[in-house]
Length: 90
Image (tube, rainbow, N blue to C red; front, side):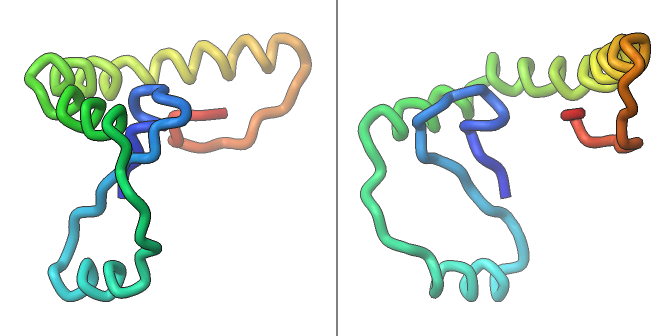
């Protein structure tokens, strides 16, 4: 599952997707709460599927480990403890 809100920092846009085994996706769909998708959310979803967005995701994926390590080092420099993880957040 992915959320455009998290990947692109699109606060307030309720749009995401799930990719997986067709039987699992069908089971998830059976429990999905129906709601309409706003025009802004649709526009964001279209924009996030273009080539420029793909390049952005690739750059983000490549840059996050170094940025995270830098943040962890700075936090430790302030005497704070940080939980070890490979997540893109601290």
